[in-house]
Image 1 (cartoon, one colour):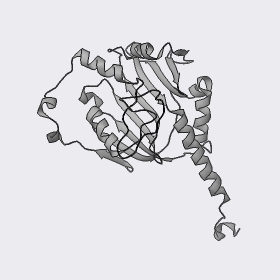
Image 2 (tube, helix red, strand yellow):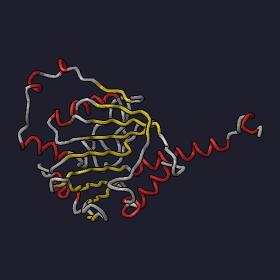
Image 3 (cartoon, one colour):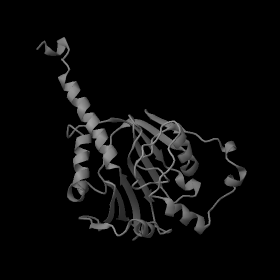
Image 4 (cartoon, helix red, strand yellow):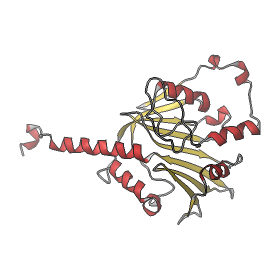
Length: 253
């Protein structure tokens, strides 16, 4: 696939003791989950310093102040396994179902429209999108992880994480950490979303009914200030392009 760069991990570089670990004790897994999406001030990557300022929500210590780098990618590979890197593609902020943002998160809907202008067209962006499909092989509960960073300054834009049953109590841990969320009942499928806001950023945890009578969990973290900065840049570039004179051939008829 064009634009996808897999990061391969040499099994010989992994300690034998780690390769022998086929499971993880519940206490260790719970400790990992309690650190996920918690407020923290992670040290900045050495080759791209993170700006000073309060964190909002983080995933594995990666948040609004983090910057994409090779060092960060290696750190995440140790926790989530091999990744795939996409350097250009769409940035669609919609979650759950079409119209959810417009109905419940209008500010994000406005950002989404700015990022995908003109409407009705496929708008691609330079980005660094890391995708992890085998995180369970690293003894994590995650079925899919997607982390999107700005290609210009490396800032985190939007994270998406999916897992099935909440056996380790992640949702309860989020309530303990961030307080009671806004609860939104879906208009369709009997789903439900929990919404937290902090430092202008937004965390959404959606409980999605599955065919087995339980709920799958879809997590979205929107770094709205970073997204707004990206939308401003693209709007400026569009205006500059509109002012450029057309080639002589295009004005011949």
